[in-house]
Amino acid sequence: MFYWDPSIIILIPGLILAFWAQAKVNSTFQRYLRVNSRKGYSGAQVARELLKANGVHDVSVEMVSGHLSDHYDPRSKVIRLSPQVYQGTSVAAVGVAAHETGHALQHNQEYFPLAIRNSLVPVANFGSNMAFPLFFIGLLFQSNFGWTLMNLGILLFTAALLFQVMTLPVELNASNRAVTMLTGQGILDLGEEGAARKVLTAAAWTYVAAVAVAALQLIRLLLLRGQRED
Image 1: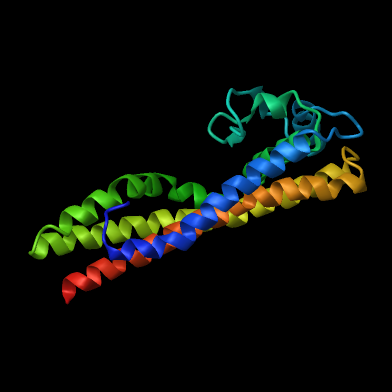
Image 2: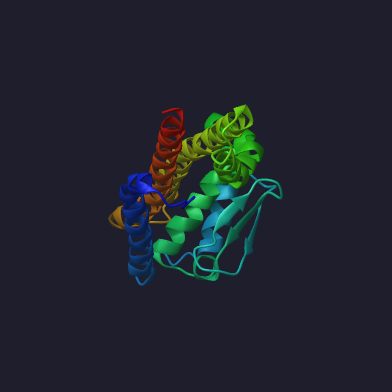
């Protein structure tokens, strides 16, 4: 990814955005981790309550180690929450737990963008691992074989970028569901809604940054390929 040549400067805006987004999500999460929700629900209770309210009974809620390691596993149908979220009663914990529950509901309701995203997982994983090795090996060969490898690398990386793009509507929808459910079920008061939304918005910026970096990297690969043609 960081093969050095002048074109690497193309990545700088995306990398700056990525560093800012990561700092933003960490600072926002830590800020609202210190603000307890008035109703006092823990993240685990929130997830289970929202699942029950939406008629989903085949998804379990577990605690997993790590910081901001919260995720929904569609294969096992498990919402895994970090200790600070699973046990915590803060606005941040409640918001994150509701967001991951939103993913479980998307899966249960066969949300179309999620289905597209999940279908891209195998090729995106392969592409993210093999795109750069294939491209830069191809760059070494002054032959049709080299062109083939570079084109294959670009194609695989495009699939990985498409996966990142499809992640955005999935994440934004999960966050919107979270805020709607939290206020609708009375878990958060209207005055607390804004704080939960700030936490989830900060998290969304990390996905925007991932798309930006990937898009700039694809532009870079195309430029390097164009230089070879010259």
